[in-house]
Amino acid sequence: MSTSPPRREWPGATLARVPYWVYGDEANYRAELRRIFEGPVWNYVGLESDLARTGDFRTTFVGEMPVVVVRGETGEIHAFENRCAHRGALIALDDCGSTGKRFQCVYHAWSYDLRGALVGVAFEKGANGKGGMPESFCKADHGPRQLRTATIGGLVFASLSPAAPPIEEYLGEAVRARLLRVLGRPVQVLGRFVQALPNNWKLYVENVKDTYHASLLHTFFSTFHISRLTQGGGVLVSPDGAHHVSATIDRGDDRGSTAYRDQGIRSESDRYRLTDPSLLDTVKEFGDDIQLQILTVFPNLVVQQVYNALAVRQVLPKGPGAMELHWTYLGFADDTAEMRRRRLRQANLVGPAGYVSMEDGCVGGFVQRGVAAAEDALSVVNMGGEGAESQDTRATEAAVRGFWKAYRAYMGY
Amino acid sequence: MLERVSRLNAEYARAIDDDRLEDWPDFFTEPCLYSITSADNHRQGMPVGVIYADSKGMLKDRVAALREANVYERQSYRHVVGLPAILGERDGAVRAETPFLVVRIMRDGTMALFATGRYLDALVEEAGVLRFRERVVVCDSSRIDTLLAIPL
Ligand code: FES
Ligand SMILES: [Fe+2]
Image 1: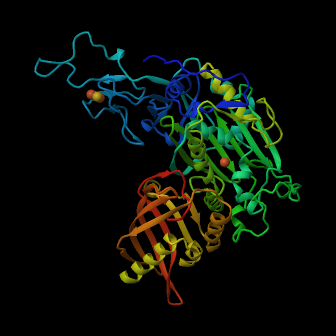
Image 2: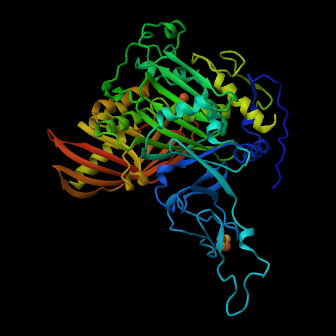
Image 3: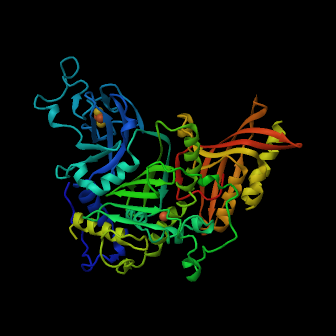
């Protein structure tokens, strides 16, 4: 398979302008799958806790490539392409399961060990002395592509490229620390949902990095007088631009701000209060005043702490104009019953029906539809300047510019 | 009982499909449980819901948020609710399971099957009126198209 070069030219050097063709161009999309998802990045592929015992597996994707992630015989985690070496059928069909020591393809029963190596060919020597594979056939020469794996904070990452640096180095010290701030002890999965979104995958990743939109689009907080952009906080961008962490800090001194009213923003209203304010009955569980922390790992992971609602979101591209968002809601294994109930209630804030996230499900589609005839036009990404450095405000698009900085480096633009 | 539950389901569906969401919380007792989950989560005993309300106040807040705060394209539902199966009584509540289909109609006229599943209900009588003490909406699929704004 050849790496088809992206056929477009990037318009100019600034990070503050992005051409709209990047959300719909088919050749560019195919190049992304090769250069980014199959390139020297770490893709999030699942949770270690889903693979407790030898032979426990989950199936997922790296870009559009189907993969199996499995706990091996010596305890380490393996990942390999979910494609039979014979005729290409899926090796594992279920979302998850436990397979013992072998996977067997249903089509002609070729079998694989937990590393994804081909170890058995049905009727390899033929039947009754006839047929069978030629003498020259060597099982070791055939098999699905194998991926490197890495784990941190209970998250499993996979990479097809030998050039991806160790995961700690990939994340950098600052992002790593903020990841472990949340995922510092064993998690427990509270449930999963898949959200099918009608937009290019990058529009969702940008949205998550876009701290500017949060309290303007998501007016739940401001309507019910809960949180505002005028609160403390900021955005941390990794030096290469690839990853980010945004945080909202409750300083308690921003409640009297009239910034929203002064600008005539529709969210300003004194009429609404929650009937049941216990929704936001929050405890500080990470030893600091950070109320919300949203962290992204390039290219496909979001780790979310919204009060006590914790989740990881996996971004999966499904063609230039479609993607899936896989939500895994988390608690910790040592949660009390009260904490569990708090997390379930606060889960209302996020997810496909989330008070502060349902809008993210549709805005990507609004952009995708809005730019349908504007291939050559450019979006304006100038909030907070031109650069991609960390800032102590959320009224900035620094992390979005960081995404484009990393994207262009991987894509060769 | 079968007839009473059927009638309640019909009224519930009409309230949502007619955009009378303000009437929706009154189908529930105080306290109550309303949650939307998937068959996968339900089978595995996973407790999370895309919507999860364990008080009537939370149901009212959901409606207020949809009316005043949340942003989404105009859309409506058409529920087709099947015949309930009455599963007996437990903890003073009648248990019922009812299959449903929901078609979502978007602003631009797109109609699509948005959800199928079953309502798992615990029903109690309050001053002669049948109400949901618990309504767990178990969707057959874990996949939700774009977003879920209106309750099922
Ligand atoms: S395709 Fe898998 S054994 Fe033939
Ligand atoms: Fe958002």
